[in-house]
Length: 234
Ligand code: MN3
Image (cartoon, rainbow, N blue to C red):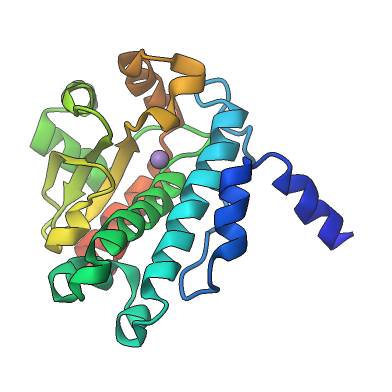
């Protein structure tokens, strides 16, 4: 029964991803389960996009990262945020693979967490920080959406948080992340076409606007508290 369920899930994953999965070495990193069903973010993010994005794209980053670390025991022992902060210390032969796949693993692990079907609004210390650093949620959203639109090609738009709780909007190309400079990500949105093309086609601006409907502010608030306590990792 268990096996049949796993195979039924596989049917939704394209052949290329199944092949990567079959060849990938086990661990040390693994694909975290989605914290909600794949249809939970409808109508803003469609089920098929979620299935492919989590089950194929994110899975490929995890497998690529494990493959890169296969013969590098010391690097394989590091927690992901530390591995990414120490890219320059890695052997040149695996640095690009770890940057792309490790960054992809970290970015998507964060991305699933900061979304949810509930919506809500920022509260407490997070709400105060948004007022202080952006002049309110609407202004944050405007600046964040504009920054996301300016990313040429594939990349991410993030709100970073430092240990004092100060917030800032930054963008990064490809699967780069502020974790690579030792920074911390409060939340971020994926502006690779695979994140929105099935539902929004080339209308990235519409996707950026709609995405705010699925931000899980309770979870972002917990991440804000963790950042100030020094315990936020990914
Ligand atoms: Mn993605």
